[in-house]
Image 1: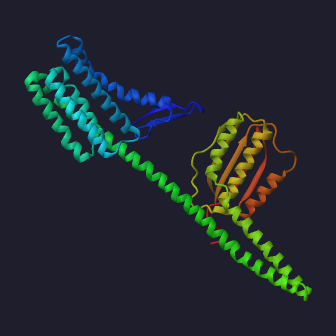
Image 2 (image 1 turned 120 degrees about the horizontal axis):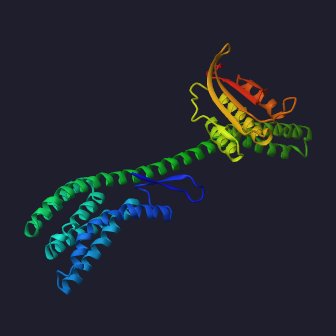
Image 3 (image 1 turned 90 degrees about the vertical axis):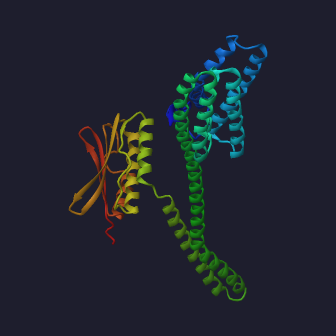
Length: 392
């Protein structure tokens, strides 16, 4: 159950979902209206109080009882939409409603039987399912017994409504609880993933640098002891230290390159944002199908997309850019093809720039090819990578 609102800062649609607390004034208003619309059933008790059918004392007591009932109801139901009370508080507030509804209906007449509708809503939305399945029929039965003393026809008409709306709100309450549990589970999974990534990074750095740094420390101490009497041997130790340090630097760079490897899905999303921000009408595919594409090939294709979009934004002066991603069967085997074409008049000069040269090398290393050049109405870049790892 959700309603759509618009984010103030970005102007993009946002969903106000049951189970989430209000995040701004607009969402607070939406949820207040969603709850407040049910207050229409209070018209009968209010008319009964205003109509002067009761003594002054009864009217004052009825008004106070109605105010307490509505306040507890709104507190219980509104809080349940975002951050529910503890089970003990729910039982206490639900008990207050369970006492007020029959007391007011017995003392003030059949016009107050509608309070049992709110009682059914509150119990259905907040009580556990097993408790709600007993409490809702019980509230309907109590209402009907009270109605036998005042207005049986009114009570008979409300029985079905109390039962239906109560069990319907039980479903809403279960949805709220499930949403809250899902939100907590997602937060836990995200935290566990972050912890696992930190542990993986720590393990990788330990594996990469632990041995090298230990060896550097050992050889440094050895060179220090040799330096006064055996400078030639100390020099060899220093040379070994330099070699180990260079290899450690290479290992760290390779590891960082792996961590910073671009992903095609992320680059597609970034291309949509970049082109739109530059005033270029973008045609970008949705989530790509990367089944069978090695990570190195995907990374090369992602770099190609980034370079192509950068050229379109900076140099082309294009009004439109189309990005296509498709699978091709070629003489070299199955390929995943990326095609970026714009209608700009600018673009690269007569020869390939450094960016295209670097892309060609990346793609060749991944077993792919690059084609780029002017076409009749703009510039086109085509990059292909194999969809099966040829090294296996």
